[in-house]
Amino acid sequence: MKPVQARALIPDTDIRIPMAYALLAGLALIFVPLLAQAETTIKSHAYSYFSEPKYSADFTHLDYVNPDAPKGGEIIISSESGTFDSFNPYARKGVSGALASMNVERLMVGTADEIGTVYGLLAESLEYPEDQSWAIFTLRPEARFADGSLVTAEDVVFTHDLFMEQGLISYREGVARIIANAKALDTKRVKFTFQANAPIRERISQAAATPVMSKAWFEETGARLDESRLEQAMATGPYMLDSFKINQRIIYKRNPDYWGKDLPINKGRWNFDTIRIEYFADSNAAMEGFSSGSYTFRLENSSKEWATSYDFPAVKNGHVIKAELDSGDQASGQGFVFNMRREKFKDIRVREAIGLMFNFNWSNEALFYGLYERVNSFAENSYLEATGTPSPEELALLEPLADQLPEAALGEAVMAPISGEKQFDRRNARKASKLLEDAGWVVGGDGIRRNADGKTLQVEFLIFSPTFDRVITPYVENLQKIGVDAKLSRVDTSQFVDRRYAFDYDIITDQLALGNEPGGNLEQMFGSKEAAVSVFNSAGLANPAVDSLIDTIRATDTKEELVAAAKALDRVLRALKFSVPQWYKDKHTVAYYDQFEHPDPLPPYDLGYLDFWWFNAEKAAKLKADGVLR
Image (cartoon, rainbow, N blue to C red):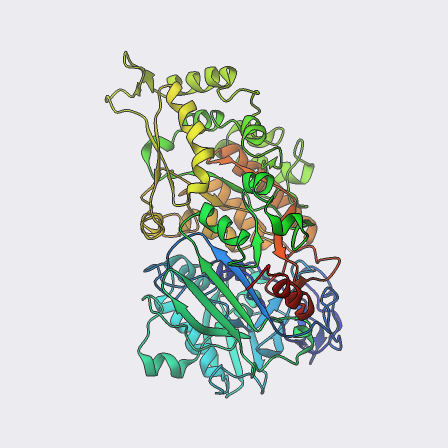
């Protein structure tokens, strides 16, 4: 990759993604080199491996924000998990409170209107040689933690080392294959040296995605990254924990002394004085809470609620806005995922048979009010989605792997099964029964399928939210009709987390999208190296052809190469049938009390309701005067 002309480094912040997944997403962040400082050294304000950054060094604000958005007010959202007992989102122990990582910032971050470009936040400059064997980040002199102490290079090195010592195993192993070490050159400059065999386009991106927390705070408190605790680590973000009541509510307040509030990339952002999360035992209680004004913004994920529950007076009177807002982001790749660590799911015929018995078409009409589309691809609603037959570029990657792949991976892109109008589709049932019989699961006199050892084909769907009961119960009934010993098990959140991390499940719902510019994140979700330890590889997928394609994607040098390799991987993942695709829609379905406003149009890759929406004090006063809100 050749450097192009440069600009100076501008900061950004991104706390929209829960940090456990933000760290994973960090493996896929990318930058563009901009200014050659010397013959072989590049200094930049932004970085993208494939394209020019949209924003130059002298930009005044992001295009999609309202730079004059007023500061103030409170937005109240809900959590239906019912429980939390920690504010450490990086530990396997405990259930983390909502938004627990929102005070943690990184060296560089992305925006909501670009794919693959990031700009500096805690770092004011980035420099590196043409071979990208190392990178030096210079911290902003004004960057401070919430207690007012300066951010130093030692804090960056400490946090990197802390994650490498105490972080999730899959994260540690993934990062160790990219970063050899981090070293403080002085108080404001930190140097990352990369492994010689690390993919070039992931080197700087991984280092730049490093979160930063206070070394002094950890040393003074004795806190560990792998232990639960009821306080946030000292960090630098615009919001910090204000108060909480276990299993009832959490309140974050905007830091009036936030060090980055005047940076161009933060203009028009982080506008609410407080962000409150109200906890509810289940979705029914949460819906009742919204209709009564217990919270003020609802991102609706239930088609039933969207179709039937918004008839309360505040909606009819226009005090609550109900809206469908466009989303251009890749679908989440949500599906029922088989745990292939279990012997019974290693046979693709068993997985395909169970997948045939989920009747999406009937579910969409009878349960979802026709609001959803079927997920087919792990890159649904994006330029990386495989369609039709493979292109010559895709075939060049797939054909050498043919002996390791299902035949379907080289033909028409595999689509999810189509079912009839009735809950139990007899045609698909016949197909499923034949597959199970061929796999050695034969129906006995009692109507239950058993293998040669006399074991029944037990299938447990593990969930924690009652919202899924009405979807999975008909699925279970369909499976039982063809002799599968299927059941639905709903446990509380803490039990689900414990079993999820211990890989103690048959089938769970997970989201496995490739990402807009996939890279090392794929190894954690689908790679053999991570299958035994990665909580992100929920399927336990370990396939040499998948590994080969992941390596190809990580080594791509052009966008065209990335697209061909990602589409080839999408084909393979779909053909392996380790996930029963669920549903998606290309809209954000939201409801909120008419005291919030947002930019129009919204950026394509983030709804941003906690980021760049704002509070209208006059509208809020009217709602109170009308008795709608207290």
